[in-house]
Structures are given as structure tokens and as C-alpha cells.
Image: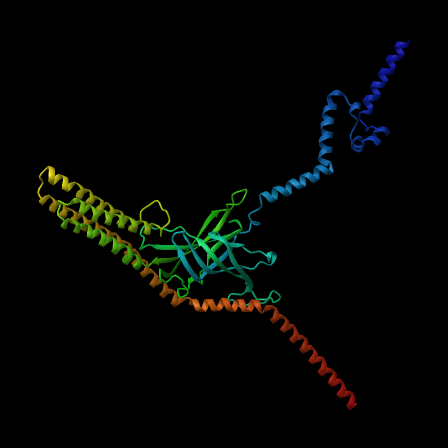
Length: 477
């Protein structure tokens, strides 16, 4: 009896379970209090216990997926990922091209060029110009000179100008194009690698490496096409030792930032002026003296070969004198790994005198023990004279080639100066423009105050005249 009742109740429970699977289940109060997420799922989705085992897993997966997609935290995270992906891969229309900053350099004063330390003193003015952007009004390229040694003195001034370099005020709307004109005065000592292969008839290039602190994707330094760079030859302080050319070479390159955690490509603007050494001092004080010392070495053959001690005494004195000259000349140059023209000449002269000393030391021994006649000594004198003439001819040819290169540079410098005089302003006019710019910069605040004061006075005069007219009308009435 009990078994029949139990079976009937089990069948009814199964039927009830199947019928209840088609409708939503009511959540319990205990789950409502414990978990809000479970409460939301139980309201919209059937209970997992009320489904058959085959459909229970699919319902659980679908409910979990839809609940995750509809969750507000998941939607917020998805929006953040979408914004980050847009920032990492912006559209081509939103990418801005790099700003072009036109640069012009004026060498106001060039000082002493120290060959031993490979540095030079200069006072330059760097003019930079770029388009004004109201959205980034405070932007500037942050220029600096990379090859400066130590602390340099700088003075920076900026102004808004138009195409004619006239001052522009932001309040006025009558200007289509506005430029930011920056003038940077730099005074200091700069490093330059000197090429001394042709010393003392060498030509050196004195360069300034102007670098921006911005990356190449943000800023590019270009040459000012309308106003070229210039140099003041009259204010060259080392005119007794060097000849300054008027031609200036410019070049834009890309360098890497040294002090950074990641490599940053920066735009670099190179400005180079040329100076040629005046070799007169070395002609008279080094070349001529070594030539005379070497020539006197040939006169030792006038002493009889039977007295080699007299010959050796004179030759050794000449050799020590040549070594002293070689040492005094080497103090003027940095310790380079190659030989200059003057080094080659002095070393060949030392070798020539040394060979003559060796011959004078053995000629006496040969004449006493081998009965060699004096004619051999004359043959050696003739051979020494030929060698002396040959290596001096070679040195003259090498000097001529070095001087020929200087002549070519001088011809190109003349063409550049005539072109500069015919098309562009002179240095005095450019320097006057810079001074005029500084005067405007210093008096800008005063001029604005005077304009405001003038407006106040005009308004006061208008009010005063109106009051006088009213008083006159009242009197007549």
C-alpha cells in the first residue's frame, strides 16, 4: 500500500516538474538577500534544477554569456578598450604632419680658433620661424646647440609677425597667416673636429649643430629659403691667424637623442662656415729654418773625410736642432694619429740628416782600412743633393695642391657673395632688423599702456564736450 502511494506521488512529481519547466521559476527569499546578480538571472531565466540534464548545460552557458555581456562593468571595459585601440591606431585624417621650423643663423662674432683643443668661440643669433597655432599657442621647438662646451649664455625673445615681419596682435582678425618669430642669441665655446692633413695650409669648417628636443614626427628643422644664413667678416677676432670665408653651408639631418630611455629621432640643422689658416708664420719660422738646417748638412762634405769627428760634431748639432724644431711644432697641434704636411717635411729632413751622419761615421773607417779614394765621398754628396732636391719638389707639389683647393673655395665664395649682395639683405641690415625686433620686444608693454591711455583720454574728451553742449543748451533755454 505504501509502495503504490509512493509511486503515484513520484509520477505526479515528474509530471509537475515537466510542466514547470515551461514557465519561470520564482526565486527564493534567501537568494534575493545574498546575491543581486543571481536575483536578476533567476527573474529572466529558468532555474537550472527545473530543466532536464541535456538542456541544463546549454541554458547555463547561454545565461552566463548574456549576463556577462549585459553586465555594466563589462560594457565599461569594452568602451575603454575601444578608445585605446583608436588612440593606438588613429585614422589618417587625424594624424598631423610635423611642424616645419625654418632656421636662419647669423655669426655675429667669431673668436679664436684653438687648434690644440679643437674648439672655437662664437657669438651667434639663431632665428626660428613657424606657423602660429591657436590651439597650441605656447608650443616651441626648444632649440639648443648640441656641440656647445660648458654653459653657454642665451637670450630668447619671441613675437607674432606677419609675412612682412610686422608685429601682429592676436585680438585683430585681419591676418590670414601668422608666424611665431623667435630670436635666440647664443654666446659660448663650441667643439669642432679639425682636419689637419694639410696643416699649415688647411681649411677648417666651423659648424653649429642646432637640435630640437621634439621628435622628428612633431618638428622638422628646414632652411629659411627667403633669408639665408650670414657671417660678419668684419667682427672676426682671429684675422691675423685665419681668413674667414663668406660662404655658409647648411644641411638638415636626423640624429638620435643620447639622454633618453628609448631612442628618439630628432631633426638636426647643421650650419657651417669655413676658415683658412694663414700659413705665413709657419713659412718663415718653421719651413725656412728647417730648409736651412738641412741645406747646411750638405756643406759638411767640405770637411776632409780624414776628420770624421769634425763632421759628426756638426751633423749631430744640426740633428738636435731639427729635433727641437720638430718638438716645438708638435706642441701646436693635437695628438692626431696621422701626419700633417709639416710633420712629413720635418721627419724627412731628420731622416736625411741622420743618413748623412751615418755616412760621416763610416767614411773615415773605410778610408783607413779599405783604401777607398775621396771620389766615393763626392758620389755620395751628389746622391744626397739629388735626394734633397727630389723630396723638396714633392713637398712643393703637395703644398700647391693644398693651396689650389683653397683657391677653388675662394672662387665659390666670391660667387656666393655676389649672389648674396644682389638678392638678399646685407649683414648690417639684418643686424639692424634684429636690434629693431629687440626694441619692439622691450617697448611692447609701454606701447600697450600708451594705447590704453590714449583711448581713456579720447573718451574723457568726448564726455567733456557732451557736457559742455548740454550746459550751453540749458543756458539758451
